[in-house]
Image 1 (cartoon, helix red, strand yellow):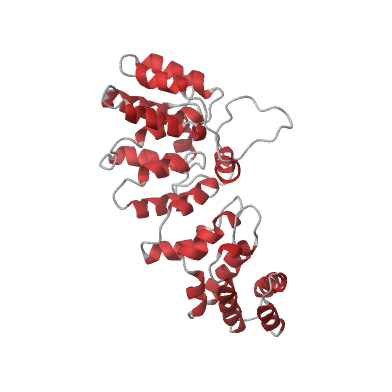
Image 2: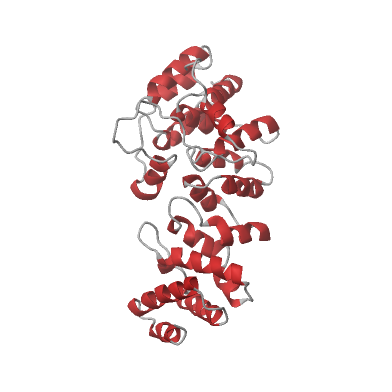
Length: 319
């Protein structure tokens, strides 16, 4: 581990603003000098693409296994092995192997040494895969009563690169749904997508946030549109009295739901005709606006091409 370089955790701490958020332009420091003209992945993008589009392949974790074994007697050697692995390693493809390995050897491995290795990697690591390794190990420990550590993990979760890994830890905390909601609000890219997938609408506050903002991310709303439609019960909201502001959000969510391609959307809704009819009913009672008209046109186009002629005909009377 490079003790001279600023740790990733320290970098994120320094970048936070007074609202405990990362500024929109923030990204993790590059781990190598960028080549001129070469595009760079957004924070969290490689893991997100692997999970949603490529199914991350299993990766060799032998060096990480050796690091876990070495931690029992020589933490410096353990860190050296981790540093060798992260040069080409990707935690998203190795975390299941390393978790299984530690669980199988839990009788031989001293918990205090593994815990220390996890903390040092997560909070002092200078390479993002090193930080992820530490976070994966922390899943195995009870961190619920360690408030200083929980605060540190909340800070790491602000970066879309680490949100997914902190979510796995936070899911074991007391009031985990509220913790996940907090994490979801703080992340805006791939991290928010992962958090929405993990979030269950156990309270009205959570359901309302999923409806109004859960799908609103910097990557593509379609990644979370179906989750938010189902968990926030979009149809029921449309069937009840809806304010103009809520109707505006409903239009945006429905637009994302219709944008199928990267992720399933409207096609996976159990009663899509019922949902779209509920939208048309609601739209009929709202003022004419460019957003309302645009969403009506999109719904009409979808209905016409998916054997829902009654809906398309109803919309013609509103346009």
